[in-house]
Image: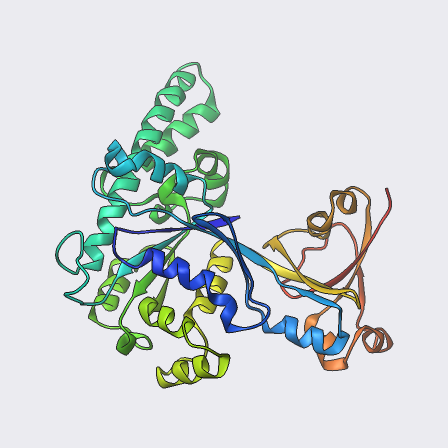
Length: 364
């Protein structure tokens, strides 16, 4: 599961990516490693891990991680191959969610590719290129559906009608994520197409340090332009975050953040937002060897969660012992949770909740 950083050239994408790569400087359990020059695996900040470690005192603490991809700046005509557009669009298609960086600050020393500062226009440029590519995909699929529908295939007719609706939306500059569809329609007909504008999106408004808390007129314009989208907005002073990362120690960085009116680094907020954007959640395992956060999709069952540890756990799943995080912390450990009768034994149908502490029983 990975999120791709997109945007026009010179809006702060690479600076943001570098902020994430340097985020390990913020705390001890905030690692980052590079898989390729533009792909990073970043740990998800979670204070619950620290609490669990205090109680269990394990040899090792392992946080959940999320993969971030720095995709080079798109330009007008990308959908037609301009500026290596095909490569960039293919990179976006491989991502599960989009982090769209918008320049929301004025600085004459940093040249904007469009010469003026207008984040809504910038958003529309990117949207337009992605919509054109999706339209191309839809039109190809429509031809196949139309032929199948002529044979009397009812499912093909349903698909044809739905794709026609999507096509009409794209032709009026409406991204697929903003088109009203049922969950079953999306799952059956839309998700398999991997449409670019159907991916969940987080808009990062890159502001100056004075606007880091409350935003500015540019941010307000973005909020207005995205009000009908199912999208999140995060305000981040990316350049200032980069400066903070250059400070020598944790205490200096915290003082800098406090002066700005912030309680934590923006990188932490962004990583958690990306995690949420990808429809992910965390469950924990805790023992003297390791306290670990495991990543699963929201809605996953206990066997699916077990399979994240090892496929044998899922195949041979018998049951799972579940402790709620709050009970574990409040009562002070597994032994006291059992004594209080707060440990639950669940079967294959159990839907895992964020923060569950789990101990699987299996047989293979």
